Picture 1 (cartoon, helix red, strand yellow):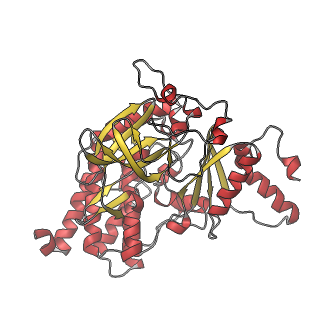
Picture 2: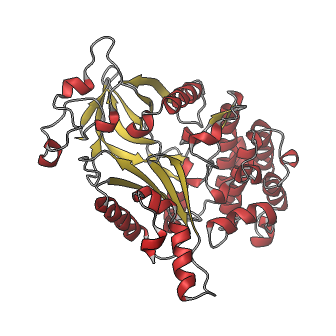
Picture 3: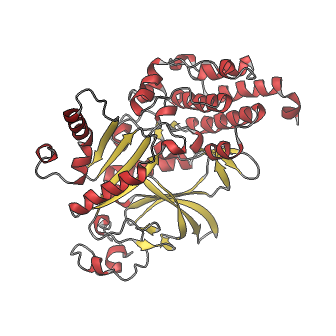
Length: 437
């Protein structure tokens, strides 16, 4: 049956893109009344797609293994990265899948495609006619050198080098970029170095957007936003160097220690609002405010906004092309963002309201068993006020959270700055000794 459904000429991504139709067809043949799993595959380029699904079972490793197996059948090397996982507190699972050039070992956990000294080629790479025989030919820094052919680039093992940074190890990886712990050798300063994924950097428009937005973010100076030290492009690949922070994300902090007391929740909300006010003052919209992107520094406890990779310059109507569709985290999106409408800074206030609701009640305000029902809840569900879910939450705090979660942006606070002032007033009223100290 699958032989009839799969079209001639399809390869790995084509099969994945049509997986939902294949599964629905197969399930209904055997059981016409069955409800197939909710699964959505979004193609975002010729060599990349995202698989979005809801799964309470630990199927992620199996799914990635199947994808790599299909790739081997077609002679393709597949890279799979988990962008979200229900077992890590996200309301859905996402696997980012991309095709790499033949001969690249994407199973190596500590590989990095960056300029530097390239090790001797492995045997399978020697047989690849597209692999350059000279590292200098690929990464040469002679004046006027053309951008390298990243589709043919070979990985090197970290530690390595990128521009004037010495790379120590990988900190994290997403669909658009890889973040490394590195040292700026000019200033002897430790940084988090975010480098655009080489296969994404092949697209001129993506490079230009990354650099434009990174430079805008570098202009943001605030105690509650991660600092961008440096922005640039080396051998055709954009990068930005960010301050390296000790501590952990708010999601991990709550998982480890439980939710903070109300005074801590209000302080974190105020600091996040101050950070957003600084971001918004530069004409930016973050678009992905969630617990994982709110960093709690150690030992100070100060909160900083992270991961501005989805941020866009306000008024840039082409933002959807960045990820091929609606971007963000569904459980924390505003209704206007979830439906692909034009958004402004008030969308970030809604997302912060979702975080505050989660902190005060212990649950998400909008959550369904799968991605589609979560998005539907954003448009139709009115969550119970925090004081109803948790009676110890003061009514004025509950009212403020519900204002942030209003589906009409006009009914939310006027700005992040005003929100910070409103939270500060609540702190002075409820905890005068703390605020006065």
